[in-house]
Length: 291
Length: 259
Image (cartoon, rainbow over all chains, first blue to last red; front, side):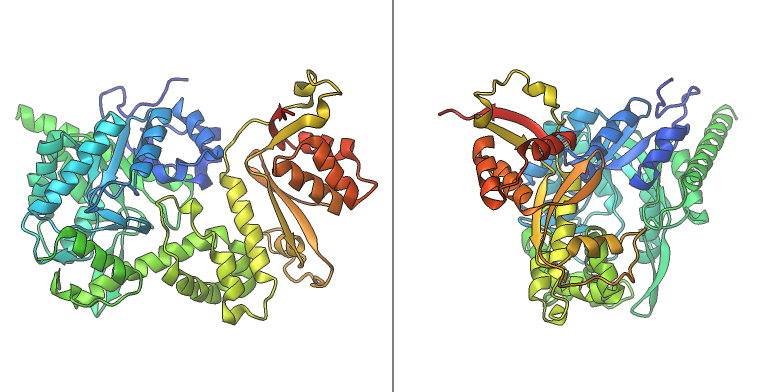
């Protein structure tokens, strides 16, 4: 069997899905044609049978390792033990992509199990840059850094998030994982222009895109969008995705759906839809180039 | 302005249930009370960590109801946030917490059922080392056999309880009968928990099997372990117990103890 690649025969980036334990057996059995499988690094850090399943799938599929626990934004030292576990996993699986978040999750001895927002200041920029440098050196490869969803902003932030990411790229050589749903959710919750945000990102540094569902919740008498990965990608997020592809060109795109997990076929349908949008924007970009 | 370190310490306190103090001044309201924004993060931690505990302790959840479990988890979280990002290691203190939790005082078996679920969780995530077969002992002479020290599979756990925890656990599996009448005074149980492939198997042990296997797990020689077992029950059958352990894939290595 030919190994699936993130890039299809015609050079387009093909969409992938998150690998969830409930779907592993069906994927092993049916070997659906998808661009790649993405796993959460922290689910494979013990030497349990799950890693064996991933190694088997790795023979046929491109793999993306997505970390949620490195806490690049913690003010103190990086958790070296965690970095070493991530490094062992990356060496073992040899993934096509490795990503983490522009956020913090831990203080020494306490893990908060969330991707918490940072104030975007010169101090944060120095801390996150130093941690990305350290992580990239330990992993021996480029990290993609994801823009998080956020429900609060700090008054003392002085740098816009898009510019903060662009500066991290300049300082560390990292790439960007542009989560279009997170961007949409934040733009709606805080009332900023997501198009201007995309314009601030260096297109060539974007190495992956995430798409997911969100829901509306009433908090303190106001409706806010919550990024819960629990439903289909919404129409405005697809629209913003198409716009992002016009700006970045086709990119490996992940359908993230990990709460209220649907049947595998539903995830594959979302991935195929992403592929269609990607093909359409490529055609439009070409048409524009020759116009 | 606070340093990033100070800010993170304060946010951490709020997420762990502490006071917001001066944090609201640092958070932009964007049309809402900044404290409501902080509460979104506090609630997220409670919900996701309760879900993580529920995934490890499904039988406890079924025994006490979803709403009581959420209450117990909420109280547990106050003093037991995860220490590390790997949540498969999270929640090992929950059984001891339940044992001391006043609202559970009448459910005396609950903590031991939780200890069983924790052992199952540990077995599920233990390293996958291949077991050794009988034939690998062919080079050991009969004279050396008493000095054998066996390495048990990393997933093997032993658990003793004065309650029928295995029957309670089985009755509360998807294919079990939750209305089954279980006699709580049916006597002490001794269990072996062990992962085979990707499934965890539970097995009830006799007193002498328990004594023998626990001695092996402590690193005692075959002769010493058999001696302990025989003192427990004169009819202890070494060949059968050792053979079963090997059949079950419970041994991953051996060495000869030096005199």
